[in-house]
Amino acid sequence: MRKEQLKTPCFVVREEGLRRNLEILKEVRMETGCRILLAQKAFSMYRVYPLIGQYLDGTTASGLYEAKLGYEEMGKENHIFSPAYKKEEMPEILRLCGHIVFNSPAQVKKYKEQVKQAGRSMGLRVNPECSTQEGHAIYDPCAPFSRLGTTLEKFEEEMSEEDISALDGLHFHTLCEQDSDDLAKTLRAVEEKFGKYLHRMKWVNFGGGHHITRPGYDIGLLKRCIRHMKETYGVEVYLEPGEAVALNAGELITEVMEIVENGMKIAILDASAACHMPDVLEMPYRPPLKDAGDPAEENAGGNGFAGSSPSGSSSVGSGAADSGTAGHERPYEYRLAGPTCLAGDVIGDYSFAQPLKCGDRLEFQDMAIYTMVKTNTFNGMRLPDIVLEREDGTCEIVKTFGYEDFKARL
Ligand SMILES: Cc1ncc(COP(=O)(O)O)c(C=O)c1O
Image (cartoon, rainbow, N blue to C red):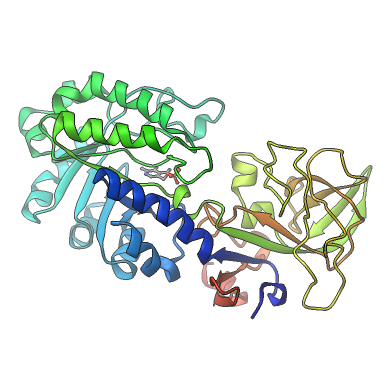
């Protein structure tokens, strides 16, 4: 099946895009000797775990279920971090995971004997109290009153000599979609605060948030950071990116269902921001439409249409229309919105070279990450199909969803 024939809404993940990212990540591993794990919270499409496993060292999880998925579907190194673990889950976690990362001295004390008995590697997440992001406090683990990671003050107050000796590694995660200059700044804070403990560790985990596969990312500096830590402290270095693995490797294809007017034209799509791309509302951000460039580069121009719909209805996107750019530079402006009851189920305002019609298909870009892992069926919305576009352009429908998926959760 070709992409143009797919039923909407659907997530289409491109094998070619994944492989491009994975080649970059593998090169970093090979050049520096660091280890790189897939953070499944960003991307858990396990159909492609065998491919990812050819390039990366394994998976990391935010809890038991992700840990189980990584174990079953990739079967390589399997790490886990959670702010707190349930006692009854610990035996299974210890069976599935080689590295267990705790968030606080209290959790270390509670579980250290069990971890040691199971012969697993144990780490503590630290908070270097070094904010490097602006404007997105909900993504900043170093924001005031953060529960994520142990501050130096708490470390020195609560970790006994025996607790510290039981640790194999330190973990920090402070970045979100950032470049390596922010990593370098964070490392200076980590070293200043926790350097004396790092000499006693076997590994340090730099967390995620490294936008390594974004064009323009300074990979040279990342490599220098990794080498510096390895050489200074004699530790193994881990990175656990999520976004970077599937960045720009997938789209959400949707169809215009209806157009209404209230002071402006509003196109109602069969995709919902609230159900299918919740980060659009949570972050918030305005997702790019196909060939429209990054929303930040509002004048990039391009074609916002994905082609003809399977129903045969026409699309204005066959080369004639270059559309879907932000702002007012095209004559036909639309608010693109979801079909749910939520007044704020709005994806964004876009302008087009030609009027939109019912049946036109639109392609939101960079929709592989933090999308299919976050979907929900609010209003009984159907979940988008999950599709893999292979390198030869053919599409494999990995999963379709229906009423039973909605009902089964309730
Ligand atoms: C502990 C931890 N590791 C890794 C990641 C992955 O981050 P990203 O997808 O931004 O690379 C996150 C994201 O929240 C995280 O909390």
